[in-house]
Image (cartoon, rainbow, N blue to C red):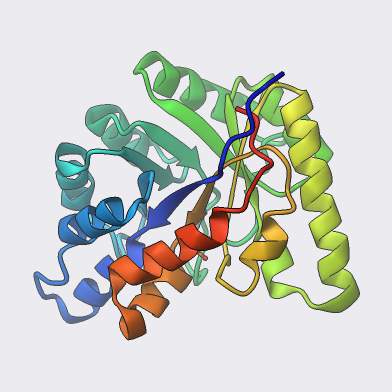
Length: 248
Ligand code: PXP
């Protein structure tokens, strides 16, 4: 029988860089933020190197790779320049995401089924460089099967639609996430999840089976304004502690 595992927390620190970029200052320091998150118990640090470089900069990714002691998860679009950065930096993980210039944050999941050839080539290159690859997708059985077909070992289920929904729509979306996590696990994928998760909705998210890691950013950085970064990370870790669904 597989051992039951807790769910890990990856902290997305993009919005520490947002605060720095809006004023063009040198602070707050993302490396220091990563250090605090790790000391508080985060299992990894996530950053999104966007094409428009609105928050995280290339130099941040290099500095984080040199300094962090846990795992660096680089979120990125399948863009040749950024794939080049990833192959040079060699983060522990890359999560491929769709990206639209004018969006506020990542909207929707990847169309893996429709872009299988382009994604497959990038996944092969990243895997050959020793990087673990994850695909950010909606809990859609077609996309989950396509993730298996293109050779991704991990998926990250997009929880944003659930987190934004209310009432019957939220209940329906949660069932889709649960079924998606189950299918992905049955097909041999490792399952992460993220987007829009906060202390109010994380209890529902923990109904998903087989979760390896939740990647959470915006709400933790917002909570940190009031309580500090370390207590904000620890509060989320405390919320994850009762999880008994992991089976890695
Ligand atoms: N996972 C992915 C793939 C994302 O794009 C984001 C947002 O950058 C997150 C997780 C974190 O989402 P949030 O900031 O809403 O917690």
